[in-house]
Length: 303
Length: 269
Image 1 (cartoon, each protein chain N blue to C red):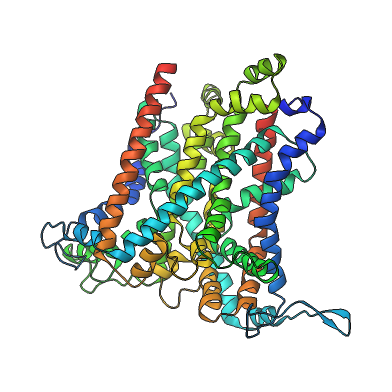
Image 2: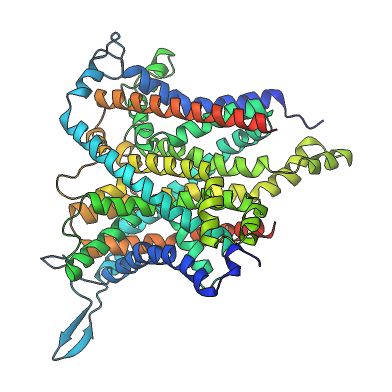
């Protein structure tokens, strides 16, 4: 393949590749391997608050692996419940984002250029606004004396306030709200590039609008749906801020458990083990995301 | 005709945009409420805006956040542009899949993972190298650069890929060195993407709670950390005022940027 740099000696090309590669290895890959290492350490008093993995005994290096963190993770049913609950909450959030976001992305992409620009702006604006503050907006709405309950009681739909704030439902609402733009934007980018002549051809051949939608638009938009869904699902599994702000004490989520182990219990090996299991659970969705990223790269490069 | 169904279209868009905007409107409206009770209206007042001006903890946190955001956005733009250019132009080198993986990981991985792993790195480095001495601005900065550079790389590689190669090739044929071509031709052509990458990094850095919490040290509280520590326990009227100012700034900015781009696209077509 002909690139600007192919006219150079390979060493110059290498010089261009190495710095960003090294930066990523140093500050992304190595730190992650450290988490893996410390997840096998044991708690100790001092700085750092974990035991070294390798220690010298009579001049011989000995490997000192501790499984305490992992043993606790798999023997305590609370941890298991937390994993399952995190995955469930992320999955439900993703499903709702698809349900609300797909029609929005679809109709925005099919609007006339002027309208499309304004509508797109409406999705980009929340994307650029602080997520923390947008989630905070729900506190005033969902509380027992909040705006939603006031509305429901004025309408006579309920006499006692519906308890939403500090429940799982509030966390769902907050997560769907916070991550919806992350689903809509990649899907929109996919839908707007679709070749509409394919639909015209289908209509010419006698397809009804619904069947053309299901058999042409939906399959063609799948890469957009999957990248959008992964951009929602993966961060949601480890979400900390939203369950902390809107959830109750019994809203079990991994990000929260890990945070508590780290900051409240100062148990770094345990927090590392929770992190490692979280990443292992996310391996399949991460691989899926990665696959579509690389495939996208290859296809765009082939253009 | 393949025109979309009007009613369905209206319902879908009204639901979607209503959901996105009703909470924001409530937040803004109650920032002008007179009483501290943020759920019932008791008259118009600007008192929360004035109390914002005297809130020293919030102001010093804001100053630190702006400092970090400026530094992080600038560094993330440089590293991210470099990384994105490599991604777009230098394919099929050994370890390319790992490169794409590392570069796209910060877009998705939960922030708690990023936070704890970088903290452990700094703790180990302190143990072996004696540096960095303490957590604070520098460590948060590194975290934010890692967090933001992926977004910049994605924006840049898309732009680089759409570039017309003929200009760069002409310059090469005329004897310019590749480095010169990059700075004299490629960089000016992708300048608008650099700007949007910088701005996105700036807002991401300014909004980050989790990574900062792991990487901050004593006395180095950023604005989102300060806000979060206040609102995790409930409603705080001064935060509503702060949020309104924030939304206003972002809103004006996004609309102006969009208008400019729209006019440019129109005159181009």
